[in-house]
Length: 154
Image 1 (cartoon, one colour):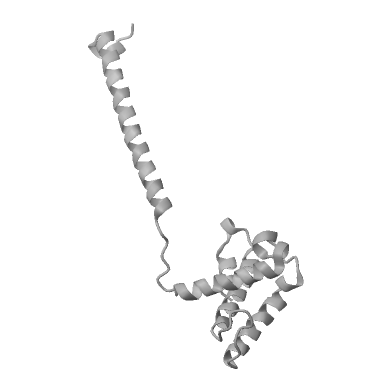
Image 2: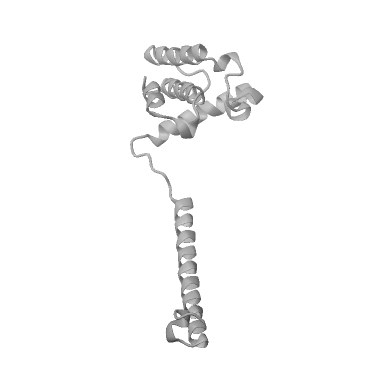
């Protein structure tokens, strides 16, 4: 036995101390697990708020997306995934649709499917979002750097 063994405590006292330390560590670990579970639950149920966006407009944009899904089926963006696979998803076509919807809105023309003039604004916004989606998919989401952010702002 070396001079540092047990520092004057008996083996039984050392084992009791170690047991207490292990029990304490387990209690702390369980408390942290409970806290993590609580935080995960709070995060899962937390509703993200967009205080600067109009919910009615977002619903209308979603209706525009649904119309596109019905029209394009397997070629719809949410089905086909990334990539400009059809002519309608080419940048010039998307931007042409944005301009056309804005022109129709300015001229007071009702949307052919939704029968309101305002629907053209949601259609223009949806198409702009679609172009953003395709443009952004050219970059790796988690490695976007400042140069890419500046390109997105253009």
